[in-house]
Image (cartoon, rainbow, N blue to C red; front, side, top):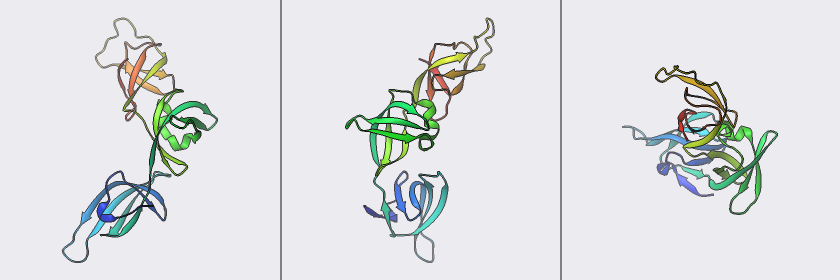
Length: 187
């Protein structure tokens, strides 16, 4: 396990502390007029998502967690989990839906994503900024109903419902922003 000092902390770095794995959300080096310097951090628990504030002395040693990024292909969904295949070793790995969170709404069988892995545990998934999905159900736009910026709900192939313009119809492919869940354009 590589050891680093609090002077080398950066945003996005994953630390292994006594309470578990934490990702650095933000940090600030503080040098008060009196007393020793310290580092004030905001850390997000990788497993629970809870955000905590923690202060370290300057030059304090902390364990940096090694997080491996693996390209994995989604093979199929099972009860409560999704099964991925490592594209280089062809090993299969089931991952719980609770670990993946809302990312499940943007993935379909055959998609390739980057999984962040620590040891044998999957920490999170890196999705592309946008994905193309098929509209499986939406109400038809009425002739003459062309109010500027008007939207209607559309159900996509993964089950997620997004607001789309009136001209989008069932069977169209749309591009959706995975960070906000908003419609971008027709594909």
